[in-house]
Length: 302
Image (cartoon, rainbow, N blue to C red):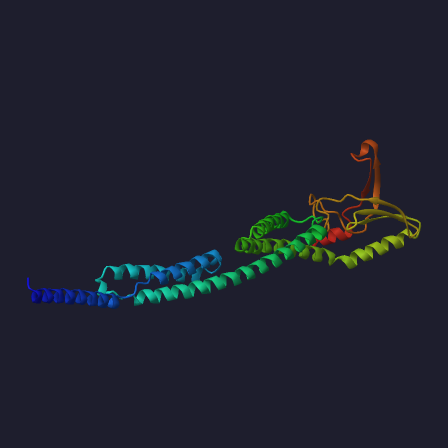
């Protein structure tokens, strides 16, 4: 091959290589940029939202973020099926941006919700502890209906569950248990308070009966006064306290005796009609009273 032909061959080969390189560079320049880095950022944003508790405390926002991420992945897969120069990742980028936006919102809301739920549950549990203390101090010794006691006990158990969940940082569970406990404990306390107020509406009558008993004792008679609230049996003579005994009352001691078998202690003024002792009574000694008196009969008839 002559020198001239050799130079021509080298020139042709060089031109072909240059054309190939230029075409390759052009193809690379024309190829759309793949969204791997953006998808990675979206995954990281989702992971941070999940770690913040968004799946539980910001469910709606977290689900939106997750759905947008799934759409981004589906769109990416669909574009990868197309010819390389015809791929368009705009929709992928759009879904990725929405994923990151919603994930950040979910993370912020989750932190705020945890803070609010924590505070509400903590304050609520403290409030219910006081209700339980009030019940034990004021109402527990009252002969309450079984339904009230049962409701109170259910509330105490649910409150214990709320405390356990709170200590384990399961704040939503703690809040739900607190709210149920609140319904039961408030219900039992309100019912007990209503019964107590209703019973104490007779206080003026009790005061009058007590004053009459003490006045009658001033004539030298021995008067036995039963204080149902204090559970005391007080003996008066000449207007002064002679003796004080502890008194056991019927199981249903609150309220007046209404009918046989209701286990209530009568409220009124009664005369001792008979004394019993020895084999005449199953107790050591007993005083029989004239019950019902005329007032009781009138009330029963009414």
